[in-house]
Amino acid sequence: ETGVTQTPRHLVMGMTNKKSLKCEQHLGHNAMYWYKQSAKKPLELMFVYSLEERVENNSVPSRFSPECPNSSHLFLHLHTLQPEDSALYLCASSQDHRPTEAFFGQGTRLTVV
Amino acid sequence: AQSVTQPDIHITVSEGASLELRCNYSYGATPYLFWYVQSPGQGLQLLLKYFSGDTLVQGIKGFEAEFKRSQSSFNLRKPSVHWSDAAEYFCAVGFDRGSTLGRLYFGRGTQLTVWP
Image (spheres, helix red, strand yellow):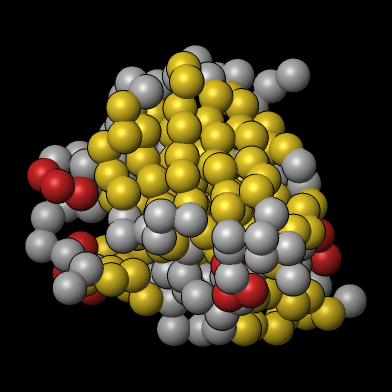
């Protein structure tokens, strides 16, 4: 398998649930990102990890908790979400935490009910 | 404030017609420039990028873009659009220094519809 893979592709969860989104990259990159894509809004950068250390937390509510156990895997742990958190969550990776091109996964379509 | 502007929210063209999607940015430093395409339900795929050198860059699927520093623009073009080009297109800007290292700033996107 190549590229950036996200699972699950679709997720429906209640506001009291706890779930996790998973991202795996097979490109040998050492920087990984979480983006949120909502309807009619620009992509919002949520978190940046470089060499498994979080280098940016873009004012994201604590109900979103990222985890990067190694350079190939990135998780987004979700708990007590709100309906307005429904969106497409995109994972991306790049080399050396530089603005070279980012490679994106297909995203997880999250619906909070 | 840093921003990327795609002034056209939605563009409709006939198959075979030429296409130009506009992108303007407002930053002081020399940017790294990207165009991405997103098909429904999919992630973003890189079409082309500009880092330095020749200001006219070629990308995949027959797309090209031209960096015009004086106009702070990086417009995407294709001479003849195919029905499969219908998608949403995003312009993005990044920098290689300072506090914004690694971050990409995206425009709101332009939705392209292609008529047969």
